[in-house]
Length: 384
Ligand SMILES: *Cc1c(COP(=O)(O)O)cnc(C)c1O
Image (cartoon, rainbow, N blue to C red; front, side, top):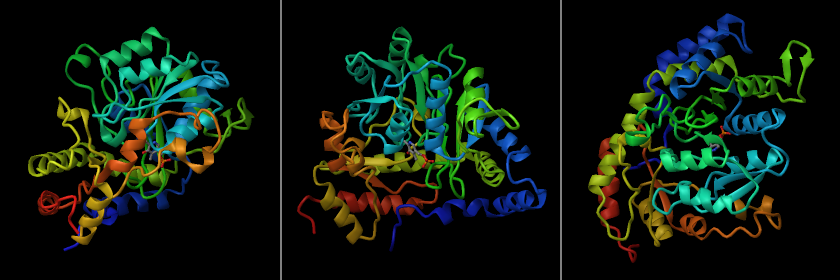
């Protein structure tokens, strides 16, 4: 029996009729840029992130670029300002920082949560020129707590959340008590979402969103994404074309109705892995103190025998993935370039050698989870 890593056709199958109806509606509307479909999507995203504004954009990388460019246009960030970010993030987070003429301040993640922590922020602050932080809720785990929030506030750091992997993840417990806003995308100053097809809520192509409760940033992002124009044929910025298609907006809106179910399906699978995998050579990702703090974009195990385990699982019909085999600072595009060349990120580099992602989509059958867990339990470093 074959266990695919991710079958996107199967993920979208439950929504097939609704997706077809939405696509037909857009085709028949004659409106293919902007309009009511995009507006409906933006209203829905304001709800999802509990923010006053949401702007549909072309993809997650552009969402990050537009936020950072927006803060530069508003004079809140300047060329060369530092942005503290965990070194084990997907390269898109870093590309956005570099593209905006800012400097990434790369720090190691917490070795348990694999996320930026208060310690990481303190480490990053030693560099002096930090003006912003980018918590990336990697693998669907909330990268935010009260300690990080007060560090950001005390040091006047802009907080730009990379929510690409964590739509719907929430803060809980002490942190959310009395807080009006406690959902990813609304925790800091602005949030960047991606609807790349493999994300928890995937479009049928590229799509993204920016969320914020700051009116000035929302206006700047909206203008920048539309050639820098604040009204027709009037350009206040040298902007881009980073708009969201109404077709993708309509398709995503269908799936956003099922956000909680989709994330709940992932939680169920993660909890099952947790209950069933018992192999001393394979370390499991920690369960968060409250279930809402994790939406399990990936289920990431670590083992010093990673390549062996991946080969063994493939031999037993189980496809896995590695997110990511090479950290951004070691990619060829940054070779010999500072601050990448002199970055010291031992945890990040070890993780790249030890981590393995197991199948965890809403379409992964529960019997597959049982089979995969049993297969892992039968693994020994000398297997195969
Ligand atoms: C996917 C992803 C992005 C980029 O999103 P795209 O829509 O693919 O451009 C950015 N950051 C993280 C952490 C991601 O996983």
